[in-house]
Image (tube, rainbow over all chains, first blue to last red; front, side):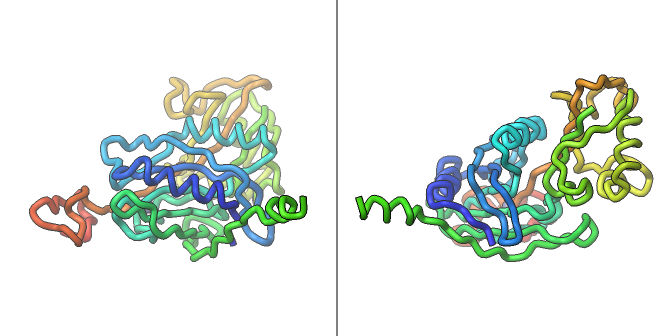
Length: 155
Length: 117
Ligand SMILES: [Zn+2]
């Protein structure tokens, strides 16, 4: 299960609308436990594939190093990544799979149809190595700040 | 020196994000790292002993591949090594205007694995 709060979920979907017709990409920071990956913060990244940004994404390793450092400072881990599929279904492609190396992380894909964010899916990269890795459909639980609204209601 | 381990490889460092390994060159540090954590070896290196192509290694803020002396670069205890697998992907879909819905004349395939070929 991928746990993400509504604000971060909407923000990663909005990112795909902003970069349309190009692919957007970013990193999910949080914690993972037996219950799945819990997103606490998202970090927007630049797509370095300016040569083919409509159907390719790549996060510069240098930027990843900085993001990993930022996560460490926050006491969080990189638990996943997201990118968009402009005018293409929210399913992983053979290239997405071949270039996925973060086992245990969630790969979130949002289909952006004619500029509007449509379906968002998450895939967990499971396995133990490059040789036996696979993508598994991963349900997304969007956490609405229920406690906050309850508290407001009681006040 | 300290080595920062990415999330997927922490399975092999008993969950540690940062491990401290001695060594005076990057190569030496790697040798000590993989003898301390033997299961890391096949995750990081191919059978030929070369760093796997998707594994990026940064010495402080420098990409190891672009350092003149590469693995022979000398390191100090205060330096930091970061291991970071690459993040990339793509859909192999051609440019806008060539999707199935409105495909007409502009269905120029983007690559040899393009489904429209
Ligand atoms: Zn993709």
